[in-house]
Length: 229
Image (cartoon, rainbow, N blue to C red; front, side, top):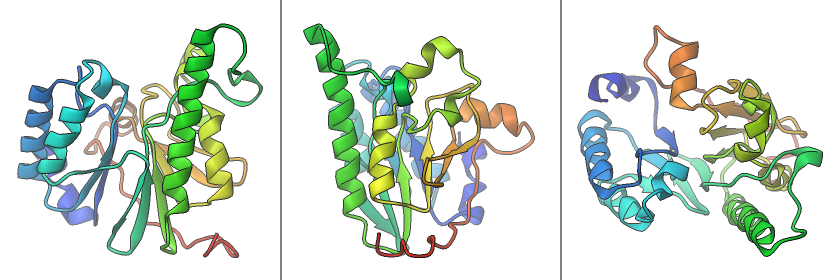
């Protein structure tokens, strides 16, 4: 990863990593990533965990290893870097719009929906704590359907949920980033017009084969009337 990420130091003020930082959520994988990032990236690194990072049930240890390497891992928190506020959470799945799964029926279904609700509340808490004019939100799962289009229709509901869009409508940000949808679309917008970018690495490598697998964005000015939203 070192030659892939080294150019980011000259092009950006900070680096966001939107989850699936490991393959199987193992501490040894986290150590490798921490070593690679420490050697290659000299700017602040902010991350959220993804579903892969939970696979082995050692996500707490993975987070500890990354944190000790200087990586700020957000799980429902807000963080400020160079005057920019960043709210981050993993998020969860559950579907979009009228296809959003409801808490009805079997206890297992209700537990699944409750996990989505809990993650949305965690995300909203992070957004509510942002105090800077420039604000970014980062997730692993998508808050909108538009950026998962291109994936098989049958798995849309596993790639994100509209429950993550609702907090964004109440606490607007300049832009949103997520991963997870490897075959989705690069960009979409929430119902209130906030740009959402899918930065899953397989999608970036396929879409920009002649560039390093990251994108560089300039944060736009806040929409009029939302500076203190």
